Length: 152
Image 1: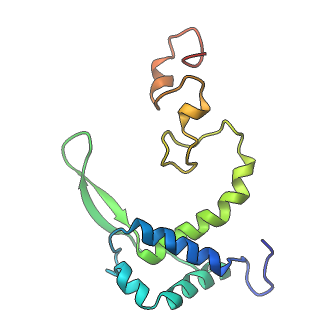
Image 2 (image 1 turned 60 degrees about the vertical axis):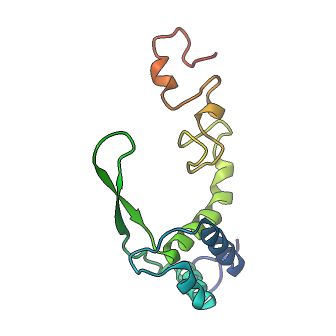
Image 3 (image 1 turned 90 degrees about the horizontal axis):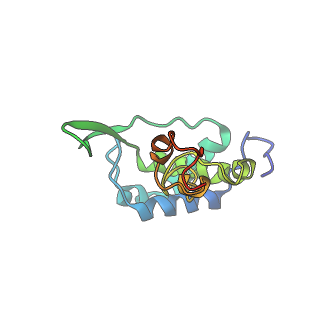
């Protein structure tokens, strides 16, 4: 994307709108500002303009997260989960959509960043990257085998 003369980044308005559409489709709880999707939509055009303008000018700063205690999945106790505001979720989505086409071609086709379909490189979990791989722990459990990777 070409760099505008008055701002360091060219963030297209349609990219901001598409990012918000994705955030709205996911629904989600309000962040620290307490603003629900319906409230955000009351001034949708103004809110999206602010996000796009601040991202384009390099002056965007995320607000604090709202801490929510959730139960640990595999054991007793709870852990804190940070819930971003709708505006921040939109800004994060804009940045991801802006950067992904620029950086994705630089990754090797077998590269992966996290196991599972929901990671930063969707569809690039270990099963696709490692021949015969099935889970994030399969490499750890196969260290004693004669081949470096299971199934090879």
